[in-house]
Length: 284
Image (cartoon, rainbow, N blue to C red):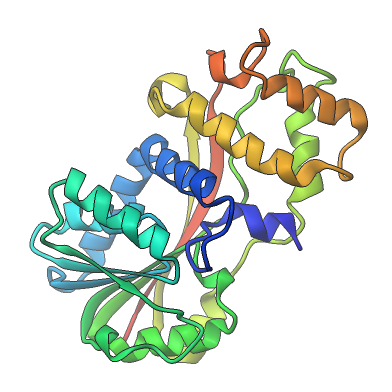
């Protein structure tokens, strides 16, 4: 398995596994730390929409970070979160209650690699697919189904993480300098996805492909940064055995040890650096 493919996107579209808890935690921390990016992205969508969305479809919703952001951005819209994992959808419902939007955020368990259920019948004003499409068995089928459920003029927003976030300074104080760069070189094994041609083949008009360069220091990222960095680095550590030199693995383990002086959990010199690309496509 390509660890780049397996770690850089959210893993909502699959049956629940043993690492669901860590995946949910990572995604929810991601939403907290990258809240400025998510707010900017949904504001951009609002500017591109030809009218205020009334029905929104979140494909491969995971624990609902996108669903909640959309519900807050569009306070009169009904959002349907669709995922194959009942555990993820349970978390969506819990979070919708906590955010005061349970009356507008619904859930639907469905395997989007199979024929889509009648409960997903359109028309929808806006479709959302964040770090999901590359998990689909046949992305062309997924896009065709999404196209058929959007109203004419409706938008589909597809987002991909171009590379897994980075957090550490060049010299992390454990092992040799450049540890994080070597970790990413070993695990990021696939080029970024590009959905432009697939969207156009489906019949969408691709209005914009926009990369977002995200650079947040400790103060900008907020108090969740350390937990987010630790969760993400631990995720990469699970793929690192046999890919990194033994001294790099030992240094990474030291950084993940909360009791060590250079442990990620207690550092004040972290930042988050990543890029994400979003395609805005309209059904003619």
